[in-house]
Length: 216
Image: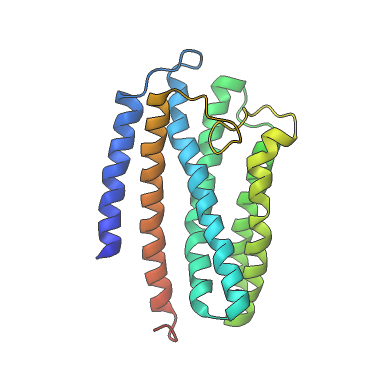
């Protein structure tokens, strides 16, 4: 019931976010309407950060306690994390073509995001390759913890290296220069993506619990 409520809240929030992106946020003066893809791109990467942070928490929890619930949390968060990272890369590529003139460049932010994506794809593949539950959970936990170490590299890469990607305007050290209507639209979409993630997480946790005969 809680998951279903989350699902409906996510749908309503996504509709509100879409309406704000096309009906409330102003047309960006330099990039024009293509800038509106930011309302997909930025919430997706922030939600991916949240997902992989939960993978980290679940991984550490499992290594400390050997309780299967932590491992299920890590798995349930990793799958949508990969999905949102894929959305981030795809939307960034679509945004990059008209603004930079290329679908892809080996820029520090783009490259580190691709590495993050591949690490967690590998995390999921690893889980499918090991049959023994404890050995699978331990190996996955190590990868989950090491993968999380890449998140600061992704986020601060635009500050640490000269990059084509624009500097961070969200979660950056300086006050955000974004205009209020754009910031409000980003916030609505961020909330929508977070609700969607919470719904996917709840559903995946329930499936994992049903798949585990020892789960209470």
